[in-house]
Length: 334
Image (tube, rainbow, N blue to C red; front, side):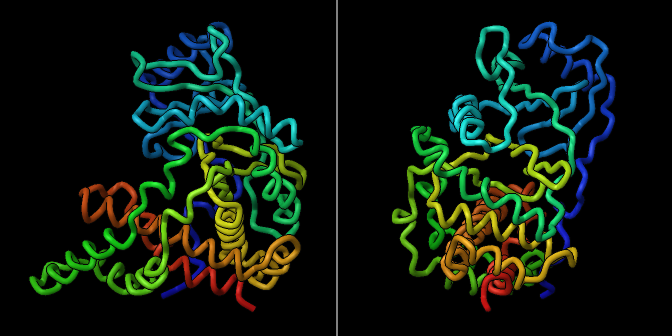
């Protein structure tokens, strides 16, 4: 299978699109309820990125607005102000949330069924996949964990590897695939999964998920579209709802993989350049082993949703997770 194909992080500039009148009115009303007087009544509302799954992001005038549904594992939202303050103190570029009318870092909207937080909108381009930008990002990549050492993780932030049972999931998926093959009902998605399932079974075969748990907070979704650059320097780390408790090498290894694969997929970096930058502060082999674990975890999440829960929303990501271990080997192995 082809490696380093372009994915939804290939673009270099934030994409925005106009919203219909009803959506504009809904967003403006929500902001007015939580942050009265912050934006003009007729401010332009644009959707940032696609519709998203769960959360929604908007540019409202000169502000960035994110709306997240409330749920049983949403306590991490309450730590965003503490996280941004710690990162800013450490010199890592972030925008602090603007307090709501009650002085909280987030408001509650939609009759208490969703959170809303507002930040100043930062203009810039996404991480472009060049060696220069990856090099400029190294202080933040290695500095986020130490900056957050004094913050106690929430239950949701601790849940990443706590609730992971990969062998049980893959065993059930394998049984479903074999049944579909015997019945002649397997489709192209099944064929793709069946091709790569043995590799992921080998990765998780000897793992003890309990041993992977950590209380160290990191940004656990530091992909190319969660970093804004301006004049070649990091201007803002985005999506601080992605802070999770995870071991250093897994967070850093997975981030190096996500950032490095964009450069390789667009021909802006070679695997050797990614490996050389990784070698400055880490053992590339250790990063590779850690990144493979996280790619396997994300693959099993998508497979569990697809085969065991009947949820298809994340199917679009399965290809890159399934081939991820081979890409990681290509990036970090000399």
